[in-house]
Amino acid sequence: MRSLLLVSAIMLATGCGRRQAPVAWDKIANSDAVKILRDDNSPYRVIYHAPVDLAKKPGS
Image 1 (cartoon, rainbow, N blue to C red):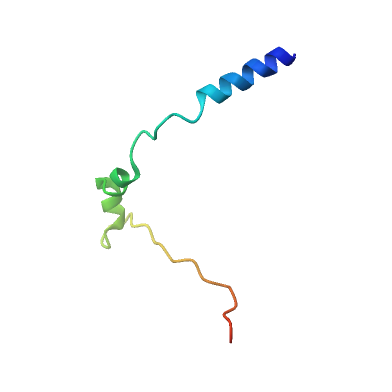
Image 2: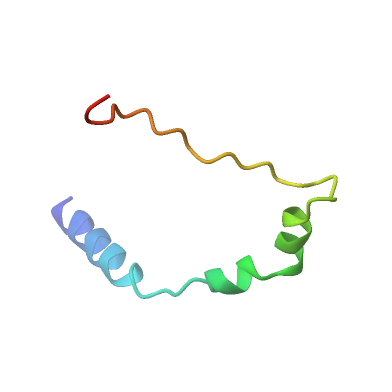
């Protein structure tokens, strides 16, 4: 049982961590699909609202 756990831990440690992302984030952000979603006239436009700051401001 211990040897099985040890072998599985070694395999997980060697198999993880060295893989790069399939596509860079800047390439995704500049892709045609994202440009369509950013267009104001697109029916598929993603509506984004900035998060509301609910923290109490000092002096208020």
